[in-house]
Image (tube, rainbow, N blue to C red; front, side, top):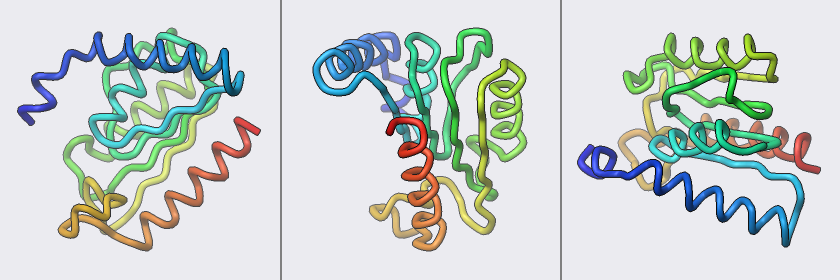
Length: 145
């Protein structure tokens, strides 16, 4: 929590924008972003600043201005999570849909925050992580290929 609270998100997003500009100018014109937990909040902020062809969030997001959202969204959320709670995740996804963007949400039963993080044995769930990974790869392949 201390790291999250001390994060200068505007600075992080500015660096992400610079990286995105470099990547799209020098490597591939289409951009996808994947964020986990706190990184998901940064991905949400970025998707409201620049055109992104695919955004994937794992158990996290941040404030949303649906009118500023760019591109398709895939969200992976844990049923046993309080940050964000499943209802909040659904509300976020529904707001992106209402703004006219493609949005898909998957809720993983029986798991908590960090279910795809192998470094957190207390919350890691191999089956859910594998399913989320396959869905993420399919989503990115579809939108970025």
